[in-house]
Image (cartoon, rainbow, N blue to C red):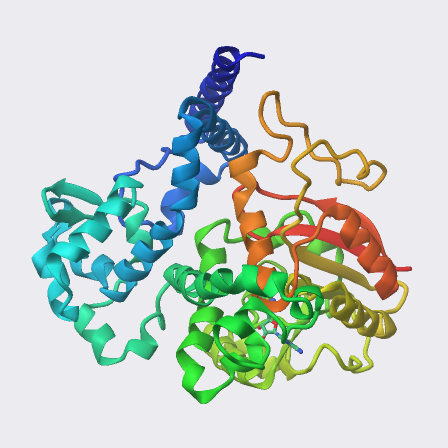
Amino acid sequence: MDGLSEIKALAEIINASIASIETSVKAASTVYPSPRTVPFTPDSEAGRNIPEVQLAGASIVAAAAQLISIVRPPPLTMIVNALQYHISTALRIAVATHTAEIIRTAGPQGKHVKEIAKPTNTDPSKLARVLRVLATNHVFVEVSPDVFAHNRLSCILDTGKNVEDILANPAAKYEGTLAFGALIEHWIDEGYFASGALLEVMLDPKDGHSNAPTNTAFNKAFKTDLPLFEFFDLPEQKFRMSRFGLGIAGVTAMTVPDAILHGFDWKEYPKGSLVVDVGGGVGSQSMIVARKNPQLSFVVQDRAPVTKAGLEVWTKEMPAYVQSGRVLLETHDFFTPQPARKVSVFLLRMILHDWSNEYSAKILRHLRKAADNDTKLLIVDNIVSYACEETLTKGIPGAERPSAPAPLLPNLGQASSIAYFTDVNMLGFFNGQERTVLQLKELLVEGGWKLVEIYYGDPFAVGQSKAIAIPA
Ligand SMILES: C[S@@+](CC[C@H](N)C(=O)[O-])C[C@H]1O[C@@H](n2cnc3c(N)ncnc32)[C@H](O)[C@@H]1O
């Protein structure tokens, strides 16, 4: 296929996908959100969250990015690729200057950068140049010279709080908010610096071959011997710790909030069945499952500081569960044996990707020892594909991905990029990894489990693919 035929084929994919979006949105009597509609709320994404619309949207993202890679002169694309770090830097500066909160009150007319720069005493002309990098990438709108307003991307950074309140208590910035920005801030802080140290660590003769969570790019960048989660426990890291916890809940709420309910038959379990949410954080996923499946009981396990926060969350949000004992917030180290009890489902969401195989297998073996023949293991993580055709997934129910139409990349390229970025994040933070189906299958065997089903799930849900296993 020559270049022109390829861009025509990609344009056809885009046109067909737009037509599919139009049909689905009309059939659902809803609207497709405009890039100018602010504020962003999960409810206002209803049109984009229709499953067919998500599928079509993923094809458009893949095709549009591929089209750009063909149309723009290669040296320019490589320059743009090499300079992408300025986007992260600009986001860091926008967040630290509270630009999103400051311009909210101005509405579509926007605010002059002199006003935006005031509360943090930043140089307005420097700030304008940085914000222009973002506006050029569709985050914020420069409505007139040096005047910036929100669009649907930039308002994601807005906590909804007043700048004065944030400045008075910066550590509580995300408390009581949807907190999507919290995870963005985690990525452009811990993630950004760990990424900067990754090359040095990978080339180090010793650390480069380690699987331990203490020989990582994160350790190098933050000059600490502690694994990331223990580093978060330090009193001086209270803000980072809370930001991470709130951010994990926020990213779910803002992408496909109820994705945990899809692809697993929670309803099959009768009254009193127990779900153990291992490394469950404050239990936000169990809470979503509980709301739709009142017959289930839950144990949410995590490290002591997290279960303490979890108890506060459940006491506020679902007090009846706490009072009746239908939820137990349990301090438990998943590298130690599980308490003996009848468990219907062990849930491991965004846990295995934090650990290399050696550590993940230990976690799995402890769960296996505590399981009986009926126990199911539900793993929820990103499941990555190779960037080429993959035939080795044949025979595993649900594991074959629908093949992307040519000339799209088999893994849908840019539409799947978050999983590959988080894979490298996991490497930098923990020596962990996002896994392919085959890698998961082999890991499960090592841990005493048998992979029986894969559910990839909504194309726009982040880290929500499922692998279901039974005792081997
Ligand atoms: C990425 S978060 C996932 C939280 C939760 N499963 C969710 O999806 O919202 C990883 C969690 O593992 C917990 N964790 C880390 N090491 C642990 C350990 N040794 N035992 C139990 N939990 C641990 C962390 O405190 C954190 O809450």
